[in-house]
Length: 375
Image 1 (cartoon, one colour):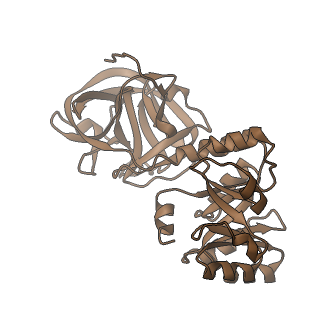
Image 2 (cartoon, helix red, strand yellow; image 1 turned 30 degrees about the vertical axis):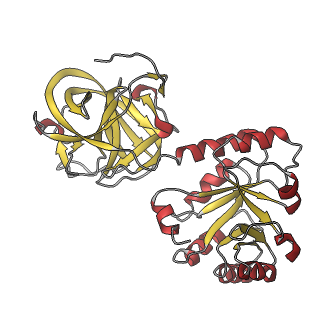
């Protein structure tokens, strides 16, 4: 339980699948769940005894009587609305999750007090407003209790993770629509990207290459001064372009923006995919990276394309030549290998920047194993 804060810091969330309402005969659903990144599955005691689950699956078993603990390994998570039963399970060495259905203000106040006694709390509310969830998040923010909210759609899951900026620690996904489950699966796949390895790149050449179209990426999020995006002209890697969070003498900062580069450029995205800047649109997902290589996903709000003078920056990182073409202007910042931003127009051969290096070869943005030469 001591890693709760670390999980939030790493942008990871608990996602449990509620299998209790899914008969074992519904093979399409169970096959999808079993072959997805979903690892934590809530089952009834009958499903636990009769079902066959892959080794990756961590079962959370709903218990309704003390005898249900027989056959459940000590240390596993058990779920119940019966707090007396959970107290007995706790004394026997089980991790405990209490289910609380909240109806009204009195029940809301009691819910967070009860939650403090258990490892996990699963909440559901009688009304669709997020205000009760906000209050429980605030009450439990400094506790070791992991807060989960019951949801039935992927959109609802996204909203829950954004409530009060912090969001809940996790969700119990209780939907049975295959398309919605696939969206949850895709979300979990993106969470596998916790860190990317950044390398120092030594600049070998920098020159103005004339006018061309460059794209700014405006996101629906806010970035910090140590964050930006990976942009490059080839599939074998890109260079760290800073967010627009650094001093500008004649205009306000745009912390939601990265002035990314020429429209042909690759931008790195979740799941180790890349996309041309020209193909991005409102709703696209892009990877925001900090100087430590920690990555998170941001949503594109718009792409702004304009004609500007362009600057070619070439360099070598980890033995590979990488280049990026950005707007030729002082206010464009590239991240130095020392974690300090450098004005693009002041960069010189021999300077060191931060870069990301990967194996070359992409088809519609997806990494493939093929012979490919890019210059």
